Length: 285
Image (cartoon, rainbow, N blue to C red; front, side, top):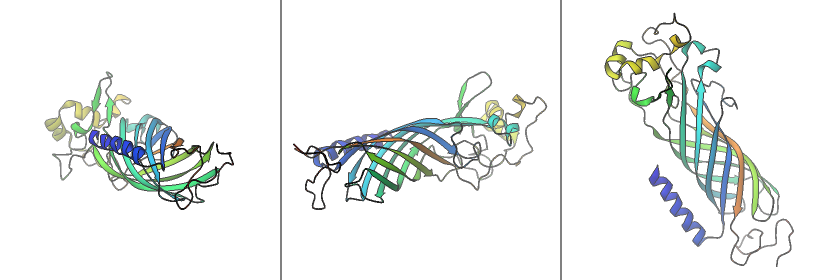
């Protein structure tokens, strides 16, 4: 991920140096996820904070190419879901994402104040689910193989860095010729069901204890923490839903600043790439 961020930084410097159709984009909002601990496809419950930044390049009046990085946190807890309260699992994870996407503005961006748009692209992201035991000690869950990954049946350890498909939409409002504010909703289609470390069925507790130790067994099923009579479920009892892959998504406010061309006081570009009058009717100096 560090190499990707460095590559993006160098690309940003180059873009600003050699092009004047570049905008700096900032994002501030909430992050959330849908999965085995959060069944609602889109919700604002148990939200995390999302911060992002990047650059976009104007190919035409309606089409932009953008790249950016986003840092976020997601979390969920069975205690807040009565349907799976007895399982008593919970997790948190940081998300570090780099994405490249194409934006399409439905009505263009020139001579309009409101610009609705949609976007889609490709992303690479890193996650690492963790939880705390009853003493408050933090444990990262992937090395514990709570569902027997790496030693039980054909279950393989999941990678903490994976690809995703980002898509969504938003609307921007022009405050001036070079500054826009807006709102955006961006969803990420994932190819893993282990964003929350929960996917399939309970592993044989003896095998889990032998291969990963008592802490793995303790955190694979935590029902006894809220019900002293609860016992570890029968082997292959449903723990998650592997047919439904996880998602994460961002909702928030965007701020865009377009770097004006040399000697330009504002406005956009005409179809030939030259200067044009301010889209907001501001007189030029």
